[in-house]
Length: 552
Image 1 (tube, helix red, strand yellow):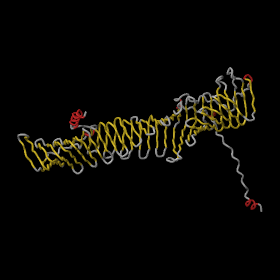
Image 2: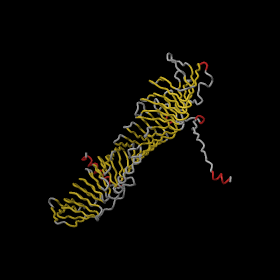
Image 3: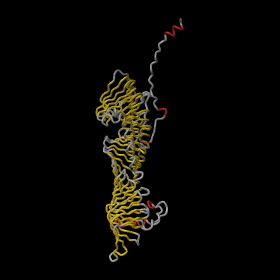
Image 4: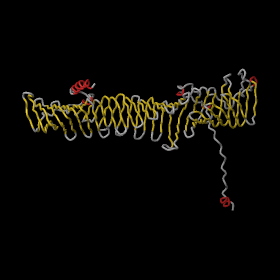
């Protein structure tokens, strides 16, 4: 392959030496420096000629020294072609250009007219703190550019770069590397196909499929910039960042600062956690690894697929806070706000905002929260859902609690319970006990077990009601003293079939995972007004001293 690349390289080199107009000519798109004139022989211990074997050639041996326009050239022996203004150098070849550049090799050919040095075997080019090692190097002195095409290694204070082909510009300090490129430093190892690197500012640009290995993370990108001095990167073209814990971040554009631990991703962002089986998507994501803080917005969706059915939660924005980070008492808070809508095949929910705290595994829904499960609707001022091992443990509805179940037998009829608060307890995701607490009112339609027809309407008022479930069916009801009435279906008084707080919000309910993006809130007259608990008046003691002074 390299033998095939050599003719191609020579052709490209010849083309590059032609005059190039405009600013789009790449590294060589600048005016060629004028020739430095003749090559001068300064010294040689022995000089002789052989007109029969090597006519027009001066054979030089011992401490050979040439000069060409301020450039000093040294070697052990040489063939000097004075007529063509060139020479071949052998053994300990060294070219010095001021005090900023040196080129060493075992063999070199130097053309003074073209100002081209062709160095071979154990080549070392040093320039202002940068060293290039290779076995084959062509150095164009007119442009100050060195080319290698048989493998090379460039080393500076920050990095070591290795590739099959490359070029280094001593004027701009810009270098290009192609084919099996590797960039290494103390923290990072970059593998790519094409890389541009500037030794002046330590900035690298990766082009083509690129793998970046950094501590415990792996980054795949197809175009990006990496500042090796500050450890900051800008990555494009659907970048993928994966760490050892199975967490993955994908985005059209990703900005990462390793020192501060801050990452930003934009457009079609997907953050996934394979270990905990959850995912966060959005168009703008921010993450501070050291503080444990994350933010997501722009069609943001939290996805949980740890259960049999996948749960999708949408909000305008998500925020993640890590409390007591790097301690044994660490826990997290997740805030979702505003316009929260959730969909799972068996459960749907809507509220204005939601807060989840991992310390007690509790998710609290605020401001007009509503939950649906099949034909049942549950609402109140607040709803708290406690989770155990990714499954619901129990739920608590606080203030103005209302449970409504649409009858399958007659969709115009609803079983209803209202109370100050409600609690539901679950086992293996199935409800086993339901409690309605304080100011309990019910409208209930008993069902005939034989033909599943509705028997009557029962109304009940009490202080506490407990319902126990077995295999998703009501097994028994417990309540203390109560007042109740049973109405035959044909004798239900007007208004008795609905509780005063009855409301059915089917039009708000998310119908699928795509419907979570369409906000449909309650009308103003249906929004719950927060219950304000009255406080007892503070008793003020009379100041006796003032009373005495006023009444002597």
